[in-house]
Image (cartoon, rainbow, N blue to C red; front, side, top):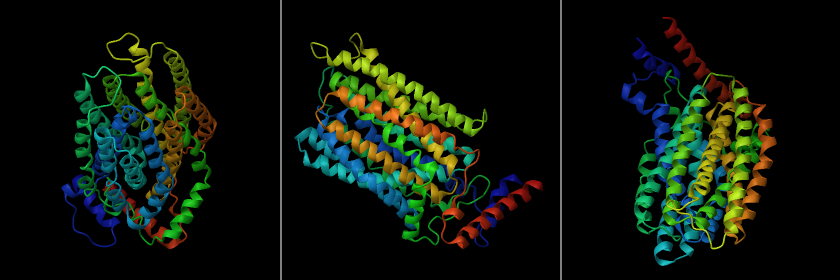
Length: 480
Protein backbone atom coordinates (compact mmCIF):
# COMPACT_ATOMS: atom_id res chain seq x y z
CA UNK A 1 0.00 0.00 0.00
CA UNK A 2 2.78 2.46 0.89
CA UNK A 3 4.47 2.04 -2.50
CA UNK A 4 1.32 3.32 -4.24
CA UNK A 5 0.79 6.21 -1.88
CA UNK A 6 2.83 8.80 -3.82
CA UNK A 7 0.88 8.02 -7.00
CA UNK A 8 -2.45 8.77 -5.33
CA UNK A 9 -1.19 11.91 -3.59
CA UNK A 10 0.21 13.33 -6.81
CA UNK A 11 -3.11 12.78 -8.49
CA UNK A 12 -4.87 14.67 -5.69
CA UNK A 13 -2.38 17.56 -5.86
CA UNK A 14 -2.71 18.06 -9.61
CA UNK A 15 -5.17 20.18 -11.56
CA UNK A 16 -7.06 17.15 -12.85
CA UNK A 17 -6.90 13.39 -13.28
CA UNK A 18 -3.41 12.13 -14.10
CA UNK A 19 -1.88 8.80 -14.95
CA UNK A 20 -0.19 6.86 -12.13
CA UNK A 21 3.38 8.05 -11.64
CA UNK A 22 6.09 5.43 -12.10
CA UNK A 23 8.85 4.81 -9.59
CA UNK A 24 11.45 6.15 -12.06
CA UNK A 25 9.45 9.36 -12.53
CA UNK A 26 9.13 9.85 -8.78
CA UNK A 27 12.91 9.43 -8.47
CA UNK A 28 13.73 11.66 -11.45
CA UNK A 29 11.34 14.37 -10.19
CA UNK A 30 12.39 14.04 -6.55
CA UNK A 31 13.95 16.96 -4.64
CA UNK A 32 17.01 14.82 -3.88
CA UNK A 33 17.75 14.05 -7.54
CA UNK A 34 17.33 17.70 -8.50
CA UNK A 35 19.56 19.01 -5.72
CA UNK A 36 22.25 16.49 -6.69
CA UNK A 37 22.10 17.74 -10.31
CA UNK A 38 22.27 21.35 -9.09
CA UNK A 39 25.27 20.40 -6.98
CA UNK A 40 26.98 18.81 -10.00
CA UNK A 41 26.27 21.95 -12.06
CA UNK A 42 27.76 24.01 -9.27
CA UNK A 43 30.74 21.63 -9.31
CA UNK A 44 31.39 22.33 -13.01
CA UNK A 45 30.86 26.11 -12.81
CA UNK A 46 31.69 28.00 -9.56
CA UNK A 47 33.43 24.87 -8.24
CA UNK A 48 36.06 25.03 -10.98
CA UNK A 49 36.18 28.82 -10.63
CA UNK A 50 36.92 28.36 -6.93
CA UNK A 51 39.60 25.79 -7.73
CA UNK A 52 41.41 28.37 -9.83
CA UNK A 53 40.79 31.23 -7.43
CA UNK A 54 41.88 29.37 -4.29
CA UNK A 55 45.24 28.48 -5.80
CA UNK A 56 45.90 32.23 -5.67
CA UNK A 57 45.51 34.79 -8.48
CA UNK A 58 43.73 32.29 -10.75
CA UNK A 59 47.02 30.42 -11.01
CA UNK A 60 48.91 33.45 -12.29
CA UNK A 61 52.16 34.81 -10.90
CA UNK A 62 50.72 38.19 -9.88
CA UNK A 63 47.23 38.71 -8.42
CA UNK A 64 46.33 42.18 -9.70
CA UNK A 65 44.82 41.48 -13.17
CA UNK A 66 42.80 38.51 -11.92
CA UNK A 67 41.55 40.45 -8.89
CA UNK A 68 40.48 43.23 -11.26
CA UNK A 69 38.55 40.73 -13.42
CA UNK A 70 36.94 39.22 -10.31
CA UNK A 71 35.93 42.70 -9.15
CA UNK A 72 34.25 43.24 -12.54
CA UNK A 73 32.50 39.86 -12.22
CA UNK A 74 31.01 40.66 -8.84
CA UNK A 75 30.22 44.23 -9.87
CA UNK A 76 27.92 42.85 -12.56
CA UNK A 77 26.44 40.40 -10.08
CA UNK A 78 25.46 43.18 -7.67
CA UNK A 79 22.57 43.97 -10.01
CA UNK A 80 22.42 40.76 -12.00
CA UNK A 81 21.52 38.39 -9.14
CA UNK A 82 18.39 40.33 -8.19
CA UNK A 83 17.38 40.85 -11.83
CA UNK A 84 17.65 37.15 -12.63
CA UNK A 85 15.79 36.23 -9.42
CA UNK A 86 12.87 38.36 -10.60
CA UNK A 87 13.08 36.88 -14.11
CA UNK A 88 13.21 33.35 -12.64
CA UNK A 89 9.79 33.86 -11.04
CA UNK A 90 8.48 34.98 -14.44
CA UNK A 91 10.22 32.68 -16.93
CA UNK A 92 11.18 29.72 -14.73
CA UNK A 93 14.09 28.60 -12.58
CA UNK A 94 15.23 25.98 -15.10
CA UNK A 95 15.56 28.47 -17.96
CA UNK A 96 17.58 30.87 -15.83
CA UNK A 97 19.77 28.01 -14.59
CA UNK A 98 20.53 26.90 -18.16
CA UNK A 99 21.58 30.44 -19.08
CA UNK A 100 23.82 30.50 -16.03
CA UNK A 101 26.01 27.68 -17.35
CA UNK A 102 27.20 29.59 -20.42
CA UNK A 103 29.66 32.17 -19.08
CA UNK A 104 32.17 30.43 -16.81
CA UNK A 105 34.14 28.57 -19.50
CA UNK A 106 35.08 31.79 -21.40
CA UNK A 107 36.62 33.14 -18.20
CA UNK A 108 38.74 30.03 -17.67
CA UNK A 109 39.71 30.17 -21.35
CA UNK A 110 40.86 33.77 -20.85
CA UNK A 111 43.15 32.65 -18.01
CA UNK A 112 44.62 30.01 -20.32
CA UNK A 113 45.28 32.59 -23.05
CA UNK A 114 46.80 35.01 -20.55
CA UNK A 115 48.94 32.29 -19.00
CA UNK A 116 50.30 31.14 -22.35
CA UNK A 117 50.34 34.30 -24.50
CA UNK A 118 50.09 37.19 -22.03
CA UNK A 119 46.77 38.53 -23.42
CA UNK A 120 45.13 40.74 -20.80
CA UNK A 121 41.94 42.16 -22.41
CA UNK A 122 40.45 38.66 -22.71
CA UNK A 123 40.68 38.20 -18.92
CA UNK A 124 38.46 41.26 -18.39
CA UNK A 125 36.05 40.09 -21.11
CA UNK A 126 35.91 36.67 -19.45
CA UNK A 127 35.23 38.36 -16.13
CA UNK A 128 32.22 40.11 -17.71
CA UNK A 129 30.75 36.91 -19.24
CA UNK A 130 31.31 35.13 -15.94
CA UNK A 131 29.50 37.91 -14.06
CA UNK A 132 26.41 37.70 -16.28
CA UNK A 133 26.24 33.90 -16.17
CA UNK A 134 27.00 33.70 -12.46
CA UNK A 135 24.17 36.15 -11.74
CA UNK A 136 21.72 33.72 -13.31
CA UNK A 137 23.29 30.63 -11.77
CA UNK A 138 23.55 32.06 -8.26
CA UNK A 139 19.94 33.29 -8.30
CA UNK A 140 18.55 29.92 -9.40
CA UNK A 141 20.71 27.20 -7.80
CA UNK A 142 20.14 28.31 -4.21
CA UNK A 143 16.39 28.64 -4.76
CA UNK A 144 16.26 25.09 -6.13
CA UNK A 145 18.34 23.65 -3.28
CA UNK A 146 16.20 25.33 -0.61
CA UNK A 147 12.78 25.52 -2.26
CA UNK A 148 12.46 21.99 -3.59
CA UNK A 149 13.11 20.44 -0.16
CA UNK A 150 10.75 20.45 2.78
CA UNK A 151 11.88 22.33 5.88
CA UNK A 152 13.16 19.23 7.70
CA UNK A 153 15.69 18.46 4.96
CA UNK A 154 16.98 21.92 4.12
CA UNK A 155 20.16 21.58 6.14
CA UNK A 156 21.09 18.30 4.44
CA UNK A 157 20.11 19.52 0.98
CA UNK A 158 22.12 22.72 1.38
CA UNK A 159 25.07 20.57 2.47
CA UNK A 160 24.69 18.33 -0.60
CA UNK A 161 24.50 21.31 -2.96
CA UNK A 162 27.49 23.14 -1.51
CA UNK A 163 29.40 19.91 -0.88
CA UNK A 164 29.15 18.91 -4.55
CA UNK A 165 30.26 22.40 -5.50
CA UNK A 166 33.43 21.75 -3.54
CA UNK A 167 33.91 18.57 -5.55
CA UNK A 168 34.88 20.93 -8.37
CA UNK A 169 37.58 22.41 -6.23
CA UNK A 170 38.77 18.98 -5.07
CA UNK A 171 39.05 17.57 -8.59
CA UNK A 172 40.37 20.79 -10.08
CA UNK A 173 42.94 21.20 -7.33
CA UNK A 174 44.01 17.56 -7.64
CA UNK A 175 44.64 18.12 -11.35
CA UNK A 176 46.59 21.28 -10.60
CA UNK A 177 48.69 19.54 -7.96
CA UNK A 178 49.47 16.59 -10.23
CA UNK A 179 50.63 18.93 -12.99
CA UNK A 180 52.62 21.28 -10.74
CA UNK A 181 53.94 19.12 -7.89
CA UNK A 182 57.57 19.54 -8.98
CA UNK A 183 57.54 23.34 -8.88
CA UNK A 184 58.88 24.23 -5.44
CA UNK A 185 59.37 27.89 -6.35
CA UNK A 186 57.10 30.90 -6.67
CA UNK A 187 55.51 31.49 -10.09
CA UNK A 188 52.42 30.47 -12.08
CA UNK A 189 50.78 27.12 -12.78
CA UNK A 190 51.27 25.34 -16.12
CA UNK A 191 48.85 26.21 -18.95
CA UNK A 192 47.79 22.56 -19.43
CA UNK A 193 45.95 22.92 -16.11
CA UNK A 194 43.39 25.22 -17.72
CA UNK A 195 42.58 22.91 -20.65
CA UNK A 196 41.36 20.14 -18.34
CA UNK A 197 39.31 22.55 -16.21
CA UNK A 198 37.68 24.19 -19.25
CA UNK A 199 36.57 20.75 -20.46
CA UNK A 200 34.91 20.08 -17.10
CA UNK A 201 33.07 23.41 -17.20
CA UNK A 202 31.53 22.53 -20.56
CA UNK A 203 29.54 19.77 -18.82
CA UNK A 204 27.33 22.30 -17.02
CA UNK A 205 24.90 22.88 -19.91
CA UNK A 206 23.84 19.25 -20.51
CA UNK A 207 23.45 18.76 -16.75
CA UNK A 208 21.15 21.78 -16.53
CA UNK A 209 18.78 20.20 -19.04
CA UNK A 210 18.06 17.42 -16.50
CA UNK A 211 16.56 19.79 -13.90
CA UNK A 212 12.78 19.56 -13.31
CA UNK A 213 10.71 22.76 -13.17
CA UNK A 214 9.29 23.35 -9.65
CA UNK A 215 5.72 22.38 -10.57
CA UNK A 216 6.92 18.95 -11.77
CA UNK A 217 8.89 18.14 -8.61
CA UNK A 218 7.35 15.38 -6.46
CA UNK A 219 8.29 15.38 -2.79
CA UNK A 220 8.49 12.06 -0.86
CA UNK A 221 4.97 12.56 0.52
CA UNK A 222 3.65 13.04 -3.03
CA UNK A 223 3.12 16.76 -2.61
CA UNK A 224 4.00 18.95 -5.57
CA UNK A 225 5.67 22.37 -5.42
CA UNK A 226 3.34 25.12 -6.75
CA UNK A 227 4.33 26.70 -10.08
CA UNK A 228 6.15 29.97 -9.18
CA UNK A 229 5.64 31.39 -12.70
CA UNK A 230 1.82 31.08 -12.52
CA UNK A 231 0.08 34.45 -13.03
CA UNK A 232 3.34 36.33 -12.51
CA UNK A 233 4.08 39.83 -13.87
CA UNK A 234 7.56 41.33 -13.73
CA UNK A 235 6.48 44.51 -11.95
CA UNK A 236 4.64 42.48 -9.29
CA UNK A 237 7.87 40.59 -8.66
CA UNK A 238 9.76 43.89 -8.41
CA UNK A 239 7.31 45.05 -5.73
CA UNK A 240 7.77 41.77 -3.87
CA UNK A 241 11.53 42.22 -4.15
CA UNK A 242 11.23 45.70 -2.62
CA UNK A 243 9.00 44.44 0.22
CA UNK A 244 11.54 41.72 0.98
CA UNK A 245 14.39 44.23 1.08
CA UNK A 246 12.56 46.15 3.82
CA UNK A 247 11.86 43.01 5.86
CA UNK A 248 13.85 42.96 9.12
CA UNK A 249 14.51 39.24 8.77
CA UNK A 250 16.33 39.96 5.54
CA UNK A 251 18.13 43.27 6.01
CA UNK A 252 19.77 42.10 9.24
CA UNK A 253 21.62 39.49 7.13
CA UNK A 254 23.00 42.08 4.69
CA UNK A 255 26.15 42.93 6.71
CA UNK A 256 27.23 39.28 7.02
CA UNK A 257 26.83 38.71 3.28
CA UNK A 258 28.90 41.81 2.49
CA UNK A 259 31.53 41.40 5.18
CA UNK A 260 32.30 37.80 6.06
CA UNK A 261 34.06 36.73 2.85
CA UNK A 262 36.49 39.66 2.53
CA UNK A 263 39.28 37.51 3.89
CA UNK A 264 39.02 35.31 0.78
CA UNK A 265 40.70 37.98 -1.36
CA UNK A 266 43.47 38.36 1.19
CA UNK A 267 43.99 34.59 1.26
CA UNK A 268 44.63 34.60 -2.50
CA UNK A 269 47.24 37.33 -2.09
CA UNK A 270 48.71 35.51 0.91
CA UNK A 271 49.23 32.29 -1.06
CA UNK A 272 50.67 34.14 -4.05
CA UNK A 273 53.10 36.21 -1.99
CA UNK A 274 54.49 33.64 0.40
CA UNK A 275 54.00 30.10 -1.03
CA UNK A 276 55.55 28.03 -3.80
CA UNK A 277 53.44 26.90 -6.79
CA UNK A 278 53.00 23.36 -5.49
CA UNK A 279 52.17 24.64 -2.00
CA UNK A 280 49.50 26.88 -3.53
CA UNK A 281 47.93 23.96 -5.39
CA UNK A 282 48.07 21.90 -2.21
CA UNK A 283 46.37 24.80 -0.44
CA UNK A 284 43.55 24.77 -3.00
CA UNK A 285 43.11 21.01 -2.53
CA UNK A 286 43.09 21.06 1.27
CA UNK A 287 40.79 24.09 1.25
CA UNK A 288 38.32 22.07 -0.80
CA UNK A 289 38.55 19.20 1.67
CA UNK A 290 37.98 21.62 4.57
CA UNK A 291 34.97 23.18 2.83
CA UNK A 292 33.48 19.77 2.07
CA UNK A 293 33.90 18.78 5.71
CA UNK A 294 32.09 21.97 6.73
CA UNK A 295 29.18 21.21 4.39
CA UNK A 296 28.80 17.67 5.71
CA UNK A 297 29.12 18.68 9.35
CA UNK A 298 26.73 21.62 9.32
CA UNK A 299 24.30 20.00 6.89
CA UNK A 300 23.82 17.23 9.43
CA UNK A 301 23.94 19.51 12.48
CA UNK A 302 21.26 21.96 11.29
CA UNK A 303 18.71 19.16 10.79
CA UNK A 304 19.26 17.55 14.18
CA UNK A 305 16.63 17.59 16.94
CA UNK A 306 19.01 18.30 19.84
CA UNK A 307 17.51 21.74 20.44
CA UNK A 308 15.12 24.24 18.90
CA UNK A 309 16.05 26.13 15.74
CA UNK A 310 16.18 29.53 17.51
CA UNK A 311 18.63 28.16 20.10
CA UNK A 312 20.68 26.45 17.40
CA UNK A 313 20.99 29.70 15.44
CA UNK A 314 22.21 31.71 18.46
CA UNK A 315 24.71 29.07 19.56
CA UNK A 316 26.16 28.64 16.07
CA UNK A 317 26.71 32.33 15.44
CA UNK A 318 28.38 32.95 18.79
CA UNK A 319 30.70 30.00 18.14
CA UNK A 320 31.53 31.29 14.65
CA UNK A 321 32.30 34.78 15.93
CA UNK A 322 34.75 33.54 18.58
CA UNK A 323 36.56 31.22 16.15
CA UNK A 324 36.84 33.86 13.41
CA UNK A 325 38.28 36.48 15.75
CA UNK A 326 40.88 33.96 16.92
CA UNK A 327 41.81 33.11 13.32
CA UNK A 328 42.24 36.78 12.45
CA UNK A 329 44.65 37.17 15.37
CA UNK A 330 46.69 34.20 14.12
CA UNK A 331 46.72 35.54 10.55
CA UNK A 332 47.88 39.01 11.61
CA UNK A 333 50.81 37.44 13.48
CA UNK A 334 51.77 35.40 10.39
CA UNK A 335 51.50 38.37 8.03
CA UNK A 336 53.69 40.54 10.23
CA UNK A 337 56.32 37.77 10.43
CA UNK A 338 56.45 37.08 6.68
CA UNK A 339 56.19 40.70 5.58
CA UNK A 340 59.23 41.71 7.62
CA UNK A 341 61.31 38.62 6.79
CA UNK A 342 64.68 39.08 5.08
CA UNK A 343 65.29 37.43 2.67
CA UNK A 344 61.80 37.15 1.16
CA UNK A 345 59.79 34.15 2.39
CA UNK A 346 58.81 31.32 0.04
CA UNK A 347 57.03 28.61 2.02
CA UNK A 348 57.14 25.06 0.65
CA UNK A 349 55.97 21.81 2.20
CA UNK A 350 59.52 20.49 2.71
CA UNK A 351 60.68 23.63 4.55
CA UNK A 352 60.40 24.36 8.31
CA UNK A 353 57.57 26.67 9.39
CA UNK A 354 55.27 25.57 6.57
CA UNK A 355 52.58 24.15 8.86
CA UNK A 356 52.08 27.39 10.78
CA UNK A 357 51.50 29.44 7.65
CA UNK A 358 49.50 26.80 5.83
CA UNK A 359 47.05 25.68 8.53
CA UNK A 360 45.48 29.11 9.06
CA UNK A 361 44.58 29.31 5.37
CA UNK A 362 42.79 25.96 5.51
CA UNK A 363 40.93 26.90 8.70
CA UNK A 364 39.78 30.19 7.18
CA UNK A 365 38.38 28.24 4.23
CA UNK A 366 36.52 25.92 6.61
CA UNK A 367 34.96 28.88 8.41
CA UNK A 368 34.05 30.72 5.21
CA UNK A 369 32.12 27.68 3.99
CA UNK A 370 30.53 27.32 7.43
CA UNK A 371 29.25 30.87 7.12
CA UNK A 372 27.73 30.04 3.73
CA UNK A 373 25.89 27.11 5.22
CA UNK A 374 24.73 29.18 8.18
CA UNK A 375 23.30 32.07 6.14
CA UNK A 376 21.41 29.82 3.71
CA UNK A 377 20.07 27.70 6.55
CA UNK A 378 18.76 30.82 8.31
CA UNK A 379 17.14 31.97 5.08
CA UNK A 380 15.40 28.59 4.87
CA UNK A 381 14.10 28.98 8.44
CA UNK A 382 12.55 32.37 7.60
CA UNK A 383 10.74 31.59 4.33
CA UNK A 384 8.98 28.47 3.08
CA UNK A 385 7.58 29.15 -0.42
CA UNK A 386 9.83 28.91 -3.45
CA UNK A 387 8.81 32.31 -4.89
CA UNK A 388 10.03 34.19 -1.82
CA UNK A 389 13.11 31.97 -1.52
CA UNK A 390 14.03 32.72 -5.14
CA UNK A 391 13.83 36.47 -4.56
CA UNK A 392 15.59 36.19 -1.19
CA UNK A 393 18.47 34.12 -2.59
CA UNK A 394 18.94 36.50 -5.52
CA UNK A 395 18.84 39.54 -3.28
CA UNK A 396 21.18 37.98 -0.74
CA UNK A 397 23.69 37.10 -3.43
CA UNK A 398 23.52 40.65 -4.76
CA UNK A 399 24.78 41.89 -1.42
CA UNK A 400 27.34 39.10 -1.28
CA UNK A 401 28.54 40.35 -4.67
CA UNK A 402 28.89 43.88 -3.32
CA UNK A 403 31.27 42.59 -0.68
CA UNK A 404 33.23 40.48 -3.16
CA UNK A 405 33.39 43.33 -5.69
CA UNK A 406 34.82 45.72 -3.12
CA UNK A 407 37.15 43.08 -1.67
CA UNK A 408 38.60 42.14 -5.06
CA UNK A 409 38.79 45.82 -5.97
CA UNK A 410 41.02 46.43 -2.97
CA UNK A 411 42.91 43.26 -3.85
CA UNK A 412 43.57 44.62 -7.35
CA UNK A 413 45.25 47.71 -5.86
CA UNK A 414 48.94 47.32 -5.09
CA UNK A 415 48.69 47.94 -1.36
CA UNK A 416 50.35 46.09 1.49
CA UNK A 417 48.72 42.73 2.26
CA UNK A 418 48.50 43.73 5.93
CA UNK A 419 46.16 46.59 5.03
CA UNK A 420 43.94 44.18 3.11
CA UNK A 421 43.89 41.83 6.10
CA UNK A 422 42.99 44.61 8.54
CA UNK A 423 40.12 45.72 6.29
CA UNK A 424 38.85 42.11 6.23
CA UNK A 425 39.01 41.98 10.04
CA UNK A 426 37.07 45.22 10.42
CA UNK A 427 34.42 44.11 7.93
CA UNK A 428 33.86 40.86 9.78
CA UNK A 429 33.64 42.61 13.15
CA UNK A 430 30.86 44.82 11.79
CA UNK A 431 28.78 41.77 10.91
CA UNK A 432 28.69 40.32 14.42
CA UNK A 433 25.91 42.40 16.11
CA UNK A 434 23.44 42.48 13.18
CA UNK A 435 23.72 38.75 12.53
CA UNK A 436 23.27 38.03 16.24
CA UNK A 437 20.09 40.13 16.12
CA UNK A 438 18.88 38.08 13.13
CA UNK A 439 19.29 34.84 15.10
CA UNK A 440 16.74 36.14 17.62
CA UNK A 441 14.15 36.25 14.81
CA UNK A 442 14.60 32.62 13.77
CA UNK A 443 11.27 30.76 14.14
CA UNK A 444 10.76 27.08 14.85
CA UNK A 445 9.05 26.73 11.47
CA UNK A 446 9.37 28.96 8.38
CA UNK A 447 6.55 31.16 7.08
CA UNK A 448 4.79 30.81 3.72
CA UNK A 449 4.89 34.35 2.35
CA UNK A 450 2.84 33.76 -0.80
CA UNK A 451 -0.37 35.25 0.59
CA UNK A 452 1.39 38.16 2.32
CA UNK A 453 3.49 39.19 -0.68
CA UNK A 454 0.99 38.45 -3.45
CA UNK A 455 -1.03 41.30 -4.95
CA UNK A 456 -3.45 38.72 -6.34
CA UNK A 457 -4.86 36.84 -3.38
CA UNK A 458 -6.83 34.46 -5.57
CA UNK A 459 -3.76 32.76 -7.08
CA UNK A 460 -2.28 32.26 -3.63
CA UNK A 461 -5.54 30.78 -2.39
CA UNK A 462 -5.60 28.33 -5.29
CA UNK A 463 -2.06 27.20 -4.49
CA UNK A 464 -2.95 26.72 -0.84
CA UNK A 465 -6.02 24.67 -1.75
CA UNK A 466 -3.84 22.35 -3.84
CA UNK A 467 -1.41 21.90 -0.96
CA UNK A 468 -4.23 21.35 1.54
CA UNK A 469 -5.85 18.78 -0.78
CA UNK A 470 -2.59 16.86 -1.02
CA UNK A 471 -2.14 16.95 2.75
CA UNK A 472 -5.68 15.72 3.41
CA UNK A 473 -5.19 12.90 0.91
CA UNK A 474 -1.95 11.87 2.60
CA UNK A 475 -3.57 11.84 6.03
CA UNK A 476 -6.47 9.79 4.71
CA UNK A 477 -4.11 7.22 3.28
CA UNK A 478 -2.16 7.08 6.55
CA UNK A 479 -5.35 6.47 8.52
CA UNK A 480 -6.20 3.54 6.25
